[in-house]
Length: 128
Image (cartoon, rainbow, N blue to C red; front, side, top):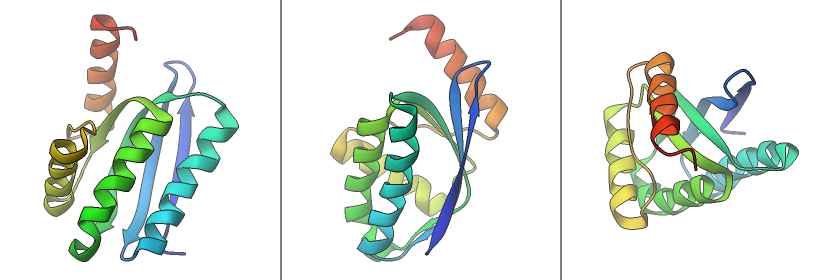
């Protein structure tokens, strides 16, 4: 397997923090990456707010276009709001491209605490 995702539900503020340790090199990697999210959120039985810690997440440029589609699908299928932390420059570029092409959310924060603060502010503005 090319990676793993460690999910942590912060029940006090009802958000999932995903620590993503993954190298996406092929479409098979993307399917496995998507499946990790599908299995986790199926157990929860609902869409949730998600903070993604991406220090150890990489996408090979050869699969970036297809990855953008998978990324949009994960966010559409499983999340209400999403926030990214510690993305590498290349992956940040892929995120913004995916946002423009597929309408997937895009943002970036320097820490989980900053992302959670943005989430809480967003909830105040729009409780969904």
